Image (cartoon, rainbow, N blue to C red; front, top):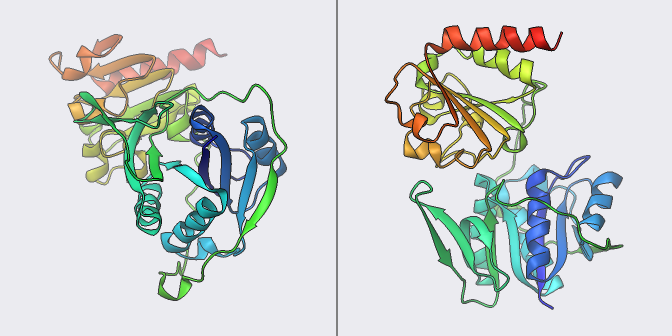
Length: 316
């Protein structure tokens, strides 16, 4: 059975939903093994076993996070070689895609990014042209590297868990030519869920005119994450890590509330798989109403505070 290597970078206390998705896909392709960088807590290790990982490849170096992506790509290449992996799966983040590109060069492997589904034969399906079409691609090289968009599938644990052995991989010394991280600044914690994994998302666009206050109050009342269109992030009203859309994050929450967003095709690409979409916009002709399950034509600065007050009232 072919080996499928899943790269999990700094899993923390618990694996992210996106990592669970990768592990689920891996089992459909072959025997799952994982390359794990960073501290591995007991709960995360137990989850890896529950999701069918047969082996855990760990780097001999402990300072990979002190550099940009070069050393991580070198570790992943060494892990893939040690495992004899035919497929490598990684997250579709900006860093994940850069690691995949460098890994492709090291392994002489075909690289496919923006994947939303993978067939058992390794054919990858990509969402293209802002989600208007899905294309199929398959690497013809002995090894293929795929980066998978989050919220593409529903994660499922293996029918039978495993007891994966831990294997140390010698990482080539590439630090001399790698860019070193000289400082880090922790992002202030908002207490809100991670945008990519949130069950409820409240997103704002050009219509918020720089004021995300009403959206944040509604999000806090609902226990939701805050998202934004590219127009809002480009204007500097909110960080780019909140951007949803073709060039941002893909979300698939149970409830998506769009406030002051026109619903251009680039934005739809990042949220149209939400279970329920509620749109608030002053323009009755806004494209967002074409995909919304519920639409409110009105001023978000009047609608959202009323919704927040009613939610707080009903929750006591």
